[in-house]
Image 1 (cartoon, rainbow, N blue to C red):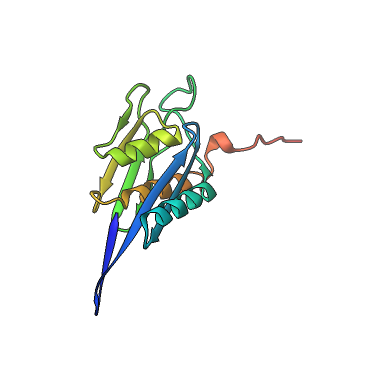
Image 2 (cartoon, rainbow, N blue to C red):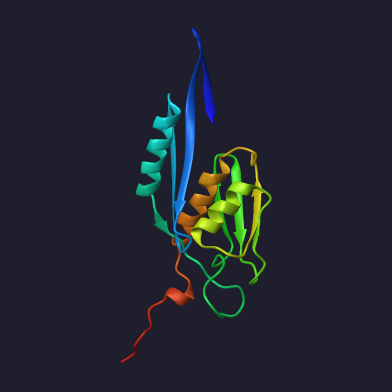
Length: 153
């Protein structure tokens, strides 16, 4: 997407590229790069996306039947003015998002079912980093299923 800056001599146009990569099974990476040329921006964004691959924590809604398919709990991510909230959803609910890019990101991360809610300037591409921020925060806390068993002697 073109980004323009007003200078004394006129306008300076630069191109911003957002690249997301994922294996559809629990890993996702996001790269954002700005450059004077489109090809350079895309190449740089691909490199940054590959370097920023993180594991995505998935969970269940209700009973632990089958494979993990949704977010483990309610989580919020923020980037710029965009505030994103992901809520666990029941099996076979699919992804509920009005925008196309969040659906693709959630699908690349391996989520099959999820409720989403976004506020702020969601028409821009700034929603993508806020979703990625949310994935990073999912491993920031310990839940009871991650506790190691305590052995009393």
